[in-house]
Image 1 (tube, helix red, strand yellow):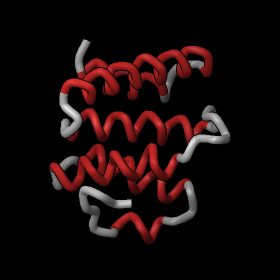
Image 2 (cartoon, one colour):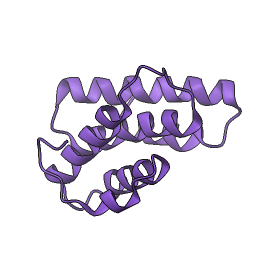
Image 3 (cartoon, helix red, strand yellow):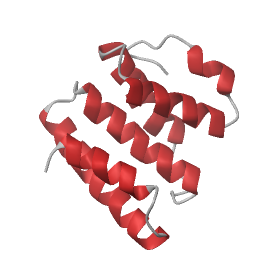
Length: 115
């Protein structure tokens, strides 16, 4: 499996019934985690990991104890810092900040240690 497979699962998670959606989210997360264990600076894998947590947050499927700012914003910002043209990371960050009622923060310039 590859990062591309992870992104396919991300896309499919938004169009499947809830039970299948949750399974696809877990499968995609495992793929992105595996990619990050190989290369923690892989911007696509960072963006994918952020996206999975963003989807979980948006669908209300997550654990209430999860720090979604850390799970979404940290990897998205790291991906943007590593690859400023990574549209998936920009999209994920802006969507999450909009869902969490902070859309004006979406334009803040990230750094490798933000937030």
